[in-house]
Length: 451
Image (cartoon, rainbow, N blue to C red):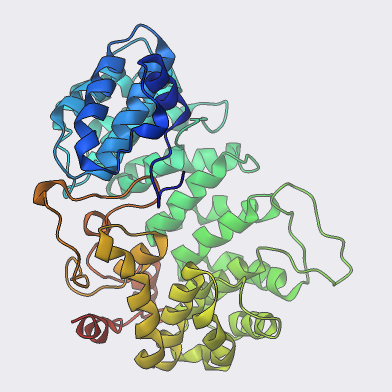
């Protein structure tokens, strides 16, 4: 069964259902009338003495909470019970479920979980502490800082959380950057070649220019297998990362070949380009403000087709990338919906032509007619003006308070949409001389067309 035709139960959820005499294929949680039955089964699983059945209850609760907006305090209470129990795997999974609802517009009130989350975040078992700290960080609770400081101070390197990462915990803590940067800078030195550092580098890239004082620690990472992620951080910092500019240009032009993601190196025969050259080219442009190196890379890629290019970063160039427009236009008809949406945005940013872009974006919004949204639909919501976007007309649900939110990677656009705004890196680039100004999307035409 698929998400489009029914439900796919988690492995441990199926174990719970079988143990209670329920055929997993008969319990369709995308049908609202079955939700109460699923809740009853989950509540029974929460009090089980068997860890695997408790994990099944968490999985079942997660499925129901993702699919339906109706507040379910009993399921939240069950997840809190898992945090306080001896079932460590279930506790970590429960915290990850709660993390999905740690936002102001959440359909579930998880404030009752805060005391248990604080205790779990200070647990010595990181399988529980990591997810609990993630929830606290997303809630903006200061108790998230204590475990983060502990992990940053560990001499054994980056911590490993099977279900989340230190970078995910750090990303919401931008407001505490000054307090956390000393520990982060030590980690950049001590774990420069560790694969576990990549999530931290992703978080720093999201933080942008506020991490500029870490440039001395970031430049040496360009000689490690984490070079591609370091390029993204340096590019997000902008002009303050000037010491890295020449190194990045050498990567793009093929003068030097950095390590690949696994630590190996390409044979220097000139027939293959380093897979992170695009990251380096973008970072070079963001740092120097000179687009020629980035454009030369894109033009070379365009000669073979831009199917593997980062179209979002190409879009940041705007009209400067006019020479690449002819290679972007065919991608509006790509078989992949994600590529079509990204190409439509890039096409509009480069040419200003909304007539070709709007039909692609409207097609991506089609899932809203059934109350669901896939990743390409969420990408469109990220370029909507004002506040939450007004979707095309959707079918009425007989239970207005219980409209489906989708499951797994399919989730309601109304819960995830945010006011349109340039990315942090784009905002920084404008303050650094006008580079990367994303302007306003063609959304007015988009919503008019949906009437």
